[in-house]
Image (tube, rainbow over all chains, first blue to last red; front, side, top):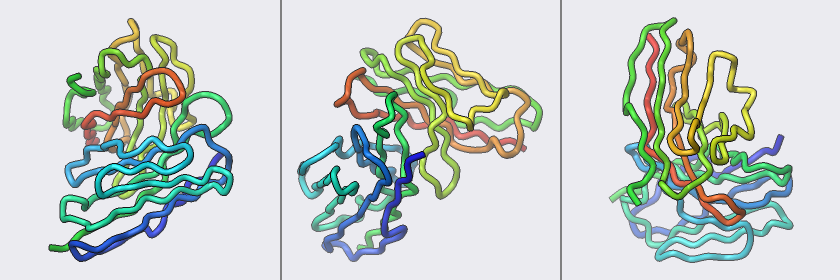
Length: 110
Length: 114
């Protein structure tokens, strides 16, 4: 099946710093989503981005489907950005089975 | 829009017992998904429904697991003869049908099998 690899696995930032999280996937996909799981376990959808670039406040995401990767940019990080960021894809094999990567664990220090 | 609701939030059971979890999706969403998440891992797909039809099941869903969505609204996930390896967070998500529809997750049910 499709492989979804996220990097880095762990990241520690000083508040105010910028960061880039990467998601590579091994096969073509119908869509791609980025999620944030907060320290209480709630998964929040950040972006639905099968291709192109989107921005939402301090966050933006870019997916280059032909090269099978996506990037999530976090600017001016805040302590509330801490948690785990997941990339999730729907393989282009029919159906809507969304497959998650292992995540990037982010800790933002005050 | 009250969000995806899951019940219970926590369940502690003894090995060998049966457990059932409930998920109420966002009302207009016709797709419903079950995932399992263990500590330090991403959510693992278990199964999904479109309306009342169960369209795909993961190999992770052994014959001890069964999911239903009888009227295309809420769903239940039952685990029979629980094992310690079943301990995990069970997450439910819903979405609209169609390509451009993001998943919305509930807060999950944390199962501990002792």
